Image (cartoon, rainbow, N blue to C red):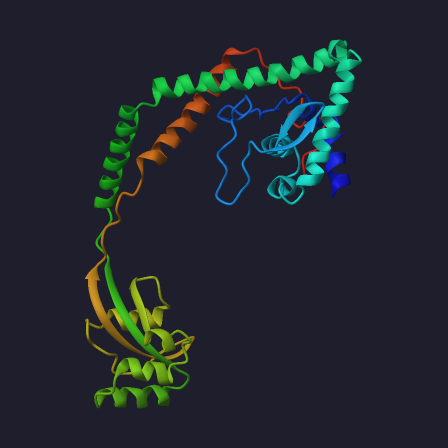
Length: 311
């Protein structure tokens, strides 16, 4: 693993980013990752202080946070287990600092190639900061609380208008006892007629595995939720009634008891304002992208960058 960590550090581009302390931020319009080094967070309970000095290099303190921060450019599994690999990460950090310091002593900080690479990295940081602030200003100006409220009210009014067009639906709750043969079903109906407990018989005799836990209860359902034979028989019953004859379906023979009958409640408007705000942000992002593209002199030569589309 130590070798892998060093190999990653020496990957082209990554070496510069890590040794120069430059974070290569993602090119994302809505990216909010800070473009300057983060301030060390307070230590979590049971964790060492981030400001703990773990080494001194030529008289300069190296803190625990320095090492944790230096792992940010590495693979996710290494970042997730930074404490486990701390000695290797410390050794890597020292190596990178020594190389950078030696190169600076040799005058490489003035080397044109170094100057160019640093300038490109700084430009990326600046671009990310400009994008973030530009888009934040757009959001502050256009996605106000009033705009969110207006969209919320618009969507709610439309939703409620659509709900009015939905015809009332009958909903019933039912329990059943499922057996393999018609004779078994008829025998159970006879027991029920004599006052036997439906739930107890469901636990004892039903081949529906769930009956052992719920006494055969199926909960509430509307038409279209069950197989047709079962549904036709169930919706022909009133609340409290039990089928007088076995009901055959592809699963076997059912004895059905309806335990509840009601009109299904209309759906409620559940759109949250924060969700609406995020929708508006995405709409704004698309609008900004379109407007900027329309105003630009843009020519797409090869959208696949020379790669053939996957077949």
